[in-house]
Image (cartoon, rainbow, N blue to C red; front, side, top):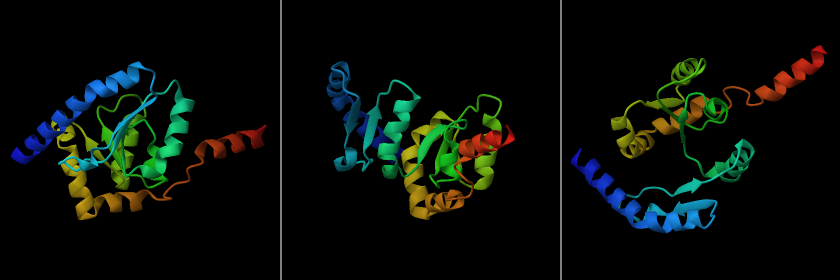
Length: 166
């Protein structure tokens, strides 16, 4: 726990030093603000903040960077196909809000493609947990459990079905 706090303090110091620079970039209209923290003592991977106007722009940004993702963090109603069809491990942020989110959450966990970040403590320990999961092979098994498990063309398939009915 002491090393986790030390790492968190170190990361916070790093973030605070760069915060003013990033704020100026955003204020000047920058659409992407990033920091390469790989050289930092914590070994944290590159983090980038993207600003977008709508879902279409978010999709374009995601497509351009998707191959760089090792995993993703999202609520259980977002992008579940990435975990269940593309094999990208998911870390679910609670609470599960909405009528389908609790069902999605349960299914993701049952399929072995996700873990839950259900508390502030879990979120604070996320970096260490992700490193542990990678070292143990669990991230890889999460990916393998989801890779091509389900067809990712659900919307297209339903559209074709509806067209065939008319």
